[in-house]
Length: 458
Ligand SMILES: Cc1cc2nc3c(=O)[nH]c(=O)nc-3n(C[C@H](O)[C@H](O)[C@H](O)COP(=O)(O)OP(=O)(O)OC[C@H]3O[C@@H](n4cnc5c(N)ncnc54)[C@H](O)[C@@H]3O)c2cc1C
Image 1 (cartoon, rainbow, N blue to C red):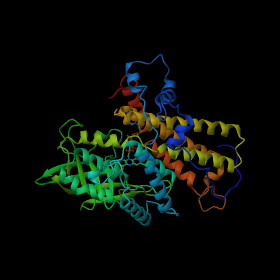
Image 2 (cartoon, helix red, strand yellow):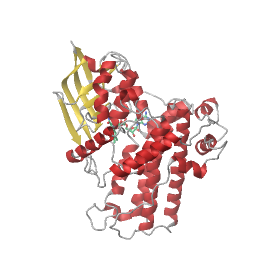
Image 3 (cartoon, rainbow, N blue to C red):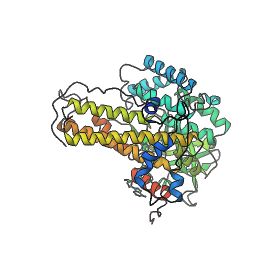
């Protein structure tokens, strides 16, 4: 903790957000051949330089594959899309918060918002037109995310459906499975949760023990899932189950879609430190699941799951806008509490500013790779490790800036910005755990990006 701030009861407002794609480019990218932009050198420098030249072997140079030129200026259609979505969001984003997604009322209001997005054609713009999307390319999708965050639009509650279940079905589902589930995901009528983690199977996911035993046309499922986000309100779960207990652990796993309203499912909400219950334990006792709910082949669910996790650890397009906005909020907080002259705070904020800028460049570098047809590969771990730890440092600095005022509840007269910083600080700790913990990301970077020896395993 640092020096005491002066008491504040009014909300701290940020100075606005300007970190959109064209703004960034017009500020810092070199221009070549008219409007075309060569961004990769800039990005390669900002990301790769700290590694230094002496350890630059073939594997590293493959990973940091330096020069890919691309035109990041939006086309006229992309610019028109930005104008369109910006105008729509300005008109439609609710003026008042919709309430916590952990309460029935708050969740219902968010579901109504999902329906509104669907009716306007914005529920899943990157999905193919054949499935109700807009076939949006990566830059258009990034523009959507940038504008969505910029407008302060509500949290999306069916991310696991739109970003995990939907794309997994498109990759591995039968035509009948796609017909059955994709429409409900898109409209937000069916909320999906992800039943992967178990009490002794998180980082070591393949250690999962929930079993599915075939009995005629059904599987009988028994076991327990944990940390199931939106589990309390979900209609469907994409689940990993063990169908062959004798096989090596990665081999005997299958991928099942489970109706959360089936008899034998018990959902117990987990109450977090902030009082919300955003996820749940799910107990499955003799739950009957039709065999046609299996995605991919029996015992081949690990391969399907790796595809699903690839979507989960993807690029997080547009997240850079959120971090820039958070940084602006931090600057506003520092000024509001009278610590703008404190040399230690100034130093920390300046470092964080540099980090958010580096992240932004790394994001565009990733975008460059993807739009030039290259896979994101294990470098996705650099992305996850970097943003989650940076986010935590931003909010930790906010808590330090507030000093003892960080301990006040939102109702206390002297509370700073209600409990915005506290909630964000607590949640930022979770960011370093979900979708693969920081330690796991470091292992992946060490082994698969840097080519260091594999970690010893028992
Ligand atoms: C907010 C939030 C939402 C989540 N939502 C979902 C969800 O919807 N569905 C779902 O299935 N799961 C969900 N999870 C669970 C998440 O995927 C797991 O928490 C995560 O994979 C870590 O597993 P674990 O909690 O079992 O920790 P463990 O794997 O037991 O790890 C404990 C500690 O040991 C470290 N560790 C483990 N293995 C190694 C290693 N090989 N080398 C070095 N260190 C190691 C870890 O980094 C960690 O610090 C969610 C988690 C959070 C925090």
